[in-house]
Image (spheres, rainbow, N blue to C red):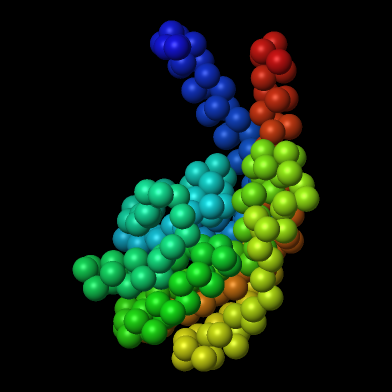
Length: 231
């Protein structure tokens, strides 16, 4: 059913207030090193006119919920069927169509699903920094209803992997860095955007960090609603 305009506007204001509270909480130093921190740091490290190739699953949700930038960046995304197929191939296609300094933000499963495309992507001389969110599998499923409905099935959804990305990078002849905090990630992106060709940055986070961050965000939002007498 349709929602009256005034109620819709009030809900939008509540969502905006939630975002402001979450942003304030994160900027006050209470943010854990997590997928959201990776998203926020990545956008902050991107100069104006840089291209962002944004992956499905957690990366796009983390950017939507927790990250923002005042810079004019180009965003390339393949929402479509909502899968993880071919993001590196898509990046190479974008580079062929319009070369531009590019940052790719994708999950570890998305990256491993399309590593063969590094054979093509490594041909580019324009800087491409691939930020791989390393949380040990498809952790998006731990934040979805299936985690509560069928916990015994989670190993089949998460599909944990143990691949040494450093060795994989050497095999393809591209640069590699491993980071475990925001300052390291920011430095790695800045450095990569100044170098020709492809750099892989593996950003390692706690496996279950997304769940904890969502719980924090939910608590902040409920607190806001409660202060307004809504919940």
